[in-house]
Image 1 (cartoon, rainbow, N blue to C red):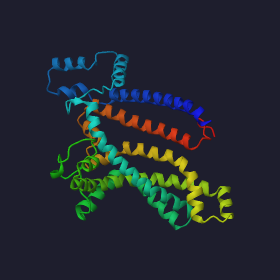
Image 2 (tube, rainbow, N blue to C red):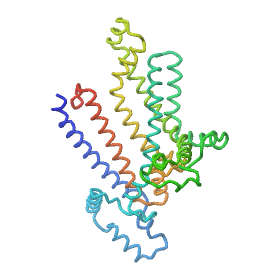
Image 3 (cartoon, rainbow, N blue to C red):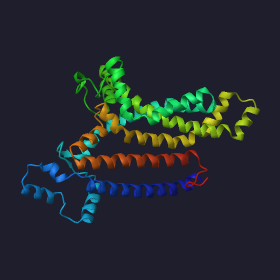
Image 4 (spheres, helix red, strand yellow):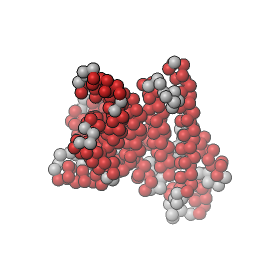
Length: 343
């Protein structure tokens, strides 16, 4: 049954993804036209002559009707052409490929921290529902979900780096370790491990701890709250009572029965959390001078490099859409009862 319906589900998901990406293209195009930034002026500078301004204006296609500009923009995107960054003088796609591994590395560590701590916290909160462990975990999660991430980052840098010197400061490496290991994957941890340079690996981990923990705390808050909700639903089911009546231990009831069923919707939550971390890394990377897409987007925005901003926005949005589709597919694979949203 699953094998016969899976192609139809995949086709439905791909159609939904295509329409969402088209909406994302329209959104980024509109953003590029309504923001109060003149991309021509940003390129030529405010001291350029009118002849130079007009020439660049025509080269960018700004003299064409808006619908022609949109289809030109769409055609370029379909061919992986995000334009040229006037800051780096390179294609935006090349810049994004350079910066993306650092963002992926940071978000992955943040997600691992969130999953490893958030799921047990949610299970404990649900099991001790209404008691002090539940209240303590809920308050802790609420703080992580409501306090601005930039404020936590600045406090973490001041206390853990500047005052206590427990972790390394901003950046991905100390300056004397930069450029030591050759770049293969773009992930400094993987590249240093491949090179067998464990001093660089240790230094990179020391720089990773604080920003990844910050993202992990944000992820913990979301995953923990949702785990608690799913577990409460499962612990109140009749099969749990039946398992207890048959003599199952509390560990077996929680781990083998309730958590096993709650894990299915958690797949979607973890995937969405990963997408949120990729999007939310903009502020964290800016605070910690992390050489990822978030930092690239922020610096491009401050210097009005709209090709870079729109290209980065599209890539991050596309990643979120892809993760969302992947979570739907995994959800259907794990729970064959689901058929296009119908149970």
